[in-house]
Image (cartoon, rainbow, N blue to C red; front, side, top):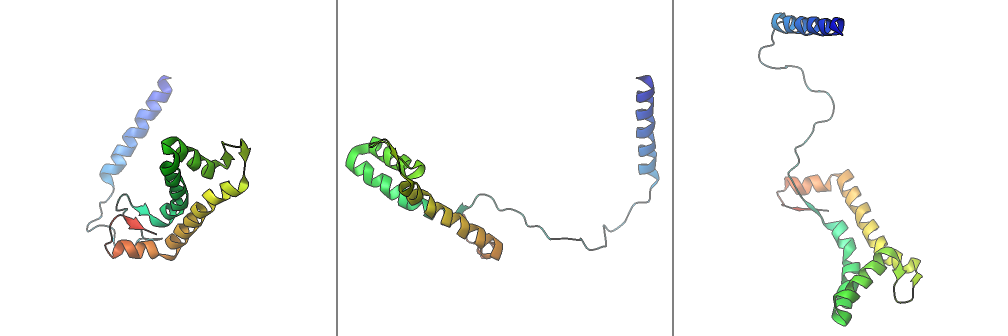
Length: 132
């Protein structure tokens, strides 16, 4: 154990000596940076396409809120997002698809907007909080 501590102390001492004796650069790094330039994130933004995919499910749930109150709204929202119909105790792929296909389409549109640079153009135009 003592040998290991001694070796570590020697290594630290050598690093300190090297850091003190190596020549310092003046004026910063003159070579161009390699690779892709990065950009600073501006904070929280709302992806409109993904939120737009939730609109049909939210409308279906709000319709249930008018008909039967918050319990009915929760049942309708869960039916669209899980595919399970609590009234008939059955699973329906069509209800699952009606809830998730618009959301999936919004996610795909959002990814395409990111890849093509549309969202970066929106950000550089100064539009706050929103992106596709």
